[in-house]
Image (cartoon, rainbow, N blue to C red; front, side, top):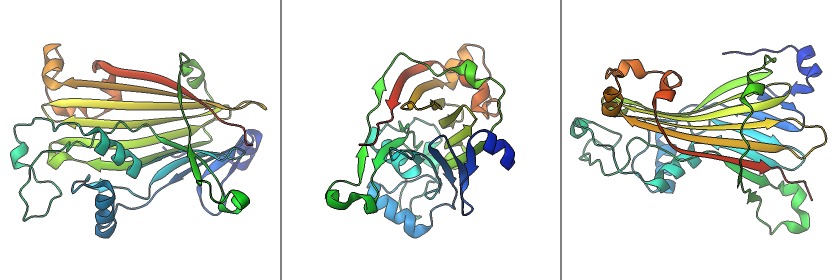
Length: 290
């Protein structure tokens, strides 16, 4: 989905494209940028394995890909990247999914090694994004001994993302999809983490989605939606909704749904068939700069 806005449309919305060929825009005090690169090479892959203390990583890790949303006046940065997502996978440490054909699967281990499925080979992650207040080195001065980044805290809330407002017809000033990692589970399914963003004159909205299909066995969908409405002179509030869904193919079959995995290639089309196992709503108030 390519979105190309002319300068007049962007200007009327109070937006401008990022300079120097960067992909994204500035709007109402936010800088929103998507970064795209190639998959990790063997040296970078080895470095990531050492940092994550694992010998297993997805087939395709896009280590340079990211989505970054920065609130300029407060230096608050909300970003999405593969490394932090895989850190979440490592920390959650789910048991491996039981699959009859798993003994024959060949993963990314060296040919001389025996494959022992004693780890979560689906790379399921609880990751819902990273956020920090970043301090510019040039601005630190006397505070140079302070950490350059400070984590932010989300608060649980009852507010919900206004889906009606999102459904209104507005110009899409910027849209992009960023793949963070992908694995085809040795042709036995798919494990995929992506983040999509769209920016309108009134707000920005993004969807971080982890999608897992283990053919004939399991489907798992972990969606995180993040939404911010542009205010006038107000401290911005960011809402984040996370919804985890999961079902075995056997349980879906018992409800009359087909067993054929080809039917389940698009998670959007079957998400409502999967029961919710966890749901949270949180908000982040962007701090005013001291």
